[in-house]
Image 1 (cartoon, rainbow, N blue to C red):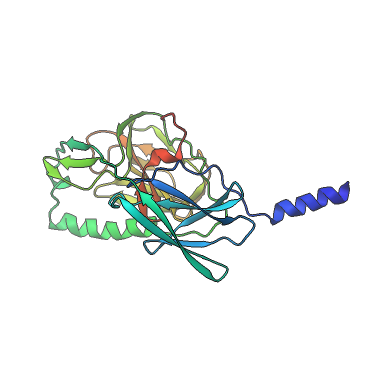
Image 2: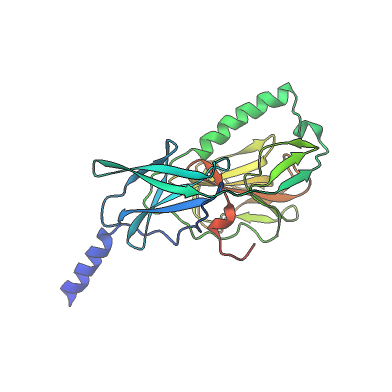
Length: 275
């Protein structure tokens, strides 16, 4: 009996770490596509999409590629490259069309719509810092997908909406907005490492959490930041307070999810019920 228990324990330790339930799949621009790759008893495959590394997790006995689809992706066939055991292959998947609605927003601070030259120099410096945070790749065999909502509140801005500021078209909304009063605590949806904090022209006080393998969450417009770069945090830990910094019309949290450096629908990582 003791030998049997020891054998089962060693067997369990030899298996790949299994991820929590994967995100919901939505094969549209700004969505997530999940592609089975190989038995989880084999070595973890290396996957790339549009020349970027892709998260690979084990679920239901299989290695699965968890692919973030760009918001600007065109409908039709797309492909990922897979390398495993010295062999390469290509997998094809299909993206369906999705038309996101348009949102018209009035911003009182005209410079937040049409920045001056000094503002643009600052914005360019900040964009480089943001890219570093969102493109960071931490190699890990266990990625937390069991997200909890960062706070409770009404969803005031949906992901993907084409935004028009003061009558001028701008980039689509790359996250979701959750309305809350200033000072409301914001908690980490899952464990990870802080990969950047700062006060940005558009985003205001911002925190980035690296959850591993290119999965990064982003929290903007905070009134206060309570964490430091490089700090390890646990799920539910307070990272800051809701505010109205940056380009806003009122206090709220802009919450974003980046996967293989593509901004994707945050709600795919949560239960169906809202915050």
